[in-house]
Image 1 (cartoon, rainbow, N blue to C red):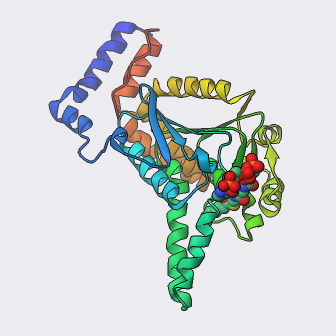
Image 2: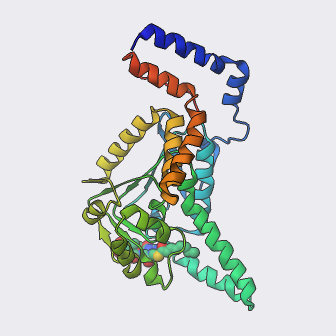
Image 3: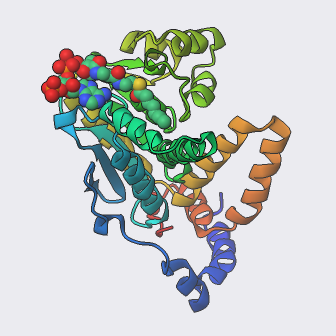
Amino acid sequence: MNKKLFTTSLRLSQNMFLRPQFIREQNSSAEAQPTSSCKFETLSVTVPKPFVYHVELNRPEKLNAFNHRMFTELTHCFKALHKDEDCRVVLISAAGRLFTAGLDLSSVASLGQKLAEHEDVARRCKILRELIITYQDGMSAAEKCVKPVISLVHNACIGAGTDLIAAVDIRYCTEDTYFQVKEIELGMAADVGVLQRLPRIIGNASLANELCLTGRKIDAKESMEAGLVSKVFKDKESMMASGLELAESLAQRSPVALQMIKRNILFSRDHGVDAGLQHIADWNQAMLQSEDFMNAAMALATKGPPPSFAKL
Ligand SMILES: CCC/C=C/C=C/C(=O)SCCNC(=O)CCNC(=O)[C@H](O)C(C)(C)COP(=O)(O)OP(=O)(O)OC[C@H]1O[C@@H](n2cnc3c(N)ncnc32)[C@H](O)[C@@H]1OP(=O)(O)O
């Protein structure tokens, strides 16, 4: 392409981006609370590379079992990351010898005590419904965060852990990993997302039904074959290094494009092709006016260096 012509037309179309009002609006983050200022008891949050956040399940002494606090902290953490302009990609992994032992079984006993305080079914239902929705929010938080989320799973990923990783965008695991939809063994139908998400991830209804109905463990090899994970690593160290490399490469891409891709993949998962096409047309009639698109197109057309993108 004629570099001069391209650059001139680009400059014209970009003038709008230099208006002070636009710059003010773009940099405004009145509502955004930096995630680094949040304090968590069950999670450890670090920034290993620019724009890459690492959320670690951090109750290793309890095998990262999900207590009430962990569910609510996941909600708060991913809400903060959703808004945080310094975050473009999120890694989620776990401290200690395994990813998670699932629901903290001691919380079942305290739930029983709470229910016992009420005789009436409506009052008991209110407690249970609020609890279920609070826990659903924790599991859905990674999906609702508009930044891509990559889970890095090692060893056991049981119950609530499988609920959690079903709500992320990319899943890696180690050779020694197994996933388990263990709720059946607890005498309950899983209610925080796996029944809704797993069949859409692995695309094999029979296998998804079998795993949910039986609670059978699925190992790394079978998880890879079923499409539950996209890479399997020899050990945690190599998985963490590769996950970080992936996150770093995504963080160098346009945040506009990353967020639009996530939004539209999720929308299209839940809607038909026509509705999905309408949705991306609605978004892109605005987003293709972004400087990210113009700058990236110019870099490609002129074989220039890749642009660095403003925060979003
Ligand atoms: C509205 C609700 C929504 C959410 C629903 C979610 C449901 C689920 O997640 S269902 C799954 C529940 N989890 C389990 O059934 C796992 C139970 N644990 C195990 O099977 C084993 O502990 C495990 C395979 C994870 C590890 O086995 P290992 O032999 O390596 O260790 P253990 O000696 O068994 O355990 C070590 C200590 O950790 C305690 N622990 C293990 N799991 C849990 C747990 N889920 N909750 C609380 N504590 C747990 C275990 O009791 C041992 O403690 P201690 O005896 O004090 O050393």
